[in-house]
Structures are given as C-alpha cells and as structure tokens.
Length: 208
Image (cartoon, rainbow, N blue to C red; front, side, top):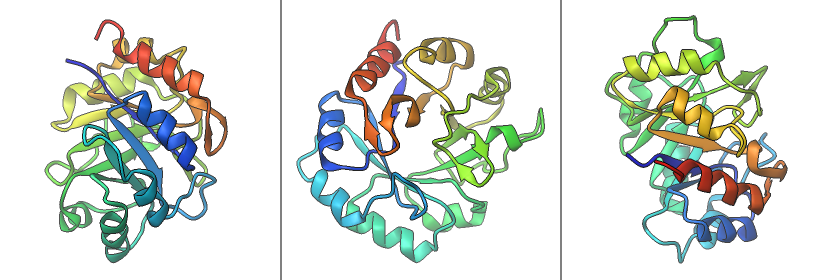
C-alpha cells in the first residue's frame, strides 16, 4: 500500500504552489499564533484556490476553542483537522469530520496506549520538547512507534525528526500508514527547501 505523505508547515504562497506541484498526499498549515510557521485562514484559502482535490488540506491546531477551529475550517476550506494539544476524546467527537490527534510519543510511558479509540481517523506520533509541540526535528523511538502501529485501531502517521535521509528506514521499521515532515525539509522555519521536499517524497514512494 502506498505511504501517505504529508508536507507540513507551509507558510507562504510560493512554497504552497511549489510543494503542491510535487503532489504529496497532504499539505499542512499551522494555525497556532506562537509558531514561526503560523498562517491566516484567508491566506490559505487564497493559496489553495486552484488546488487539485487529491491533495488534502490539513489544519494544525493547539488547544483552540471548538468555534475557532470550525470557523477556520470553513474559511480555509480544510479537509482534515490535526490537534496537537490536550484535546479530549469528547472534544474530538464534538468537532466531527476528519480528525487526526497528535501524540507526544516521548511523553507516553513505554507500552501505554492513547485513549482515542473512535473519535479520530488517525494518530500522529510526534516529539514534544518543552512546550514546543511538533516541528522540533527530534527523532522518535521507532521501536516504540512500531509497537503502537501494531496495537492501535487507527491509522498511524509517523512524524518527529524525519528527513530525506532517514525516511525510508523509518517506513521500513515502523510500517506506518503515513509520514509527516516539516523541519526536515526546511531552509529555515516557515520556508521549504524544494530539493529536500522532492527528495523526501521520492524516497517515500520508492518501492512502496
């Protein structure tokens, strides 16, 4: 089965168009004001007006109110909501639609499983450093991630420290449904290196 490839943290129109031309499965936009990759819903709507429907638009939120998320989803015309905060199962259920819940794998006790059995479409395994949730460039314990893939009912998206150099090994080791990269294909936070983006996508799709 082909690996689902998401390029996250696109923060300007030029990068959005250039990444879309490389045809990943999804592109992520950060709606968290303290992130250097933060974008406005109106800008995302403008940047993606002529997008092929095959590329999903994913909005990333951290403990935003339900009404705020719904308003941004409507304005930016998002396909998926990705939650990186302390959102509960009840919150995910109330939000409805396609929801991915990020789990800080490095904060989870070995062998412990997250409790989001039916409320989310996918679990995204990431690394939390201090108060920074995602985009840290820190690599997960792939053995722990692989064990979770085997045990949870949801699709699993692997994030955390992925780069063009290690993504093939990560896919082979963890066997996730999808992979998510942000800092691993950047020049600086909020600006992509298109050579790295292309190489990342190509390596994900080689032999898969």
